[in-house]
Image (cartoon, rainbow, N blue to C red; front, side, top):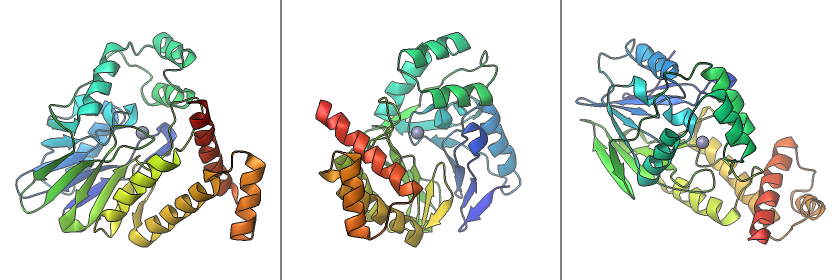
Length: 284
Ligand SMILES: [Zn+2]
């Protein structure tokens, strides 16, 4: 079930039914680092069981890409030292102060603190949350952290962006691979899904800067450099089109002028995220 990349990396594909993100292990001579902890103890356990089929090593370090539940709720099921950005820890402390029964979760949706999509997925993945104990990371960093696993290393770097201000990426130079977490996704938590063009531009610039051949996005498939960069080009093109055009009609006209066709469904959706981002900026 785990797929290899190079000699040291194994990953478990994302599972959209309950919004399980991609999980991975980087296996060194001395240490074994897991990327994200899964969206439940069951998800974390599944990964560790599968890992035993490919290596005798056990996970002893877990790196979190950001605070969102689907990347962090599995932490209690992993006997390892956890590592994350300072802001991830702050957010997980906030999670710890929340009650996680249906009533409390529903109330947070009504209050605009949680979104319906996560509410639905949390209930589906974890129908019984009486034994859920949110963990906070043991080690935190501000800008970046180097982890030497023996013969292979991981550079965990803060990237930030719209989706989560604590977003971090994990670069494995020896295997030329980058784990992007959700850093290219829009903001889900401000009423409507949206992109802030300038924040996204900064994220894309950093993503492009790594010397890598493979890129993993948490809720998508592992991509080659050519595939990812094509998507980044598309995002930047749409961002540029949306930049000065506040109405939907104006954006569509501009798109047709530049691309000489109508946008497809995916492009329309992305343009809408930029439009929502522009509207948010207008309000500020
Ligand atoms: Zn996320």
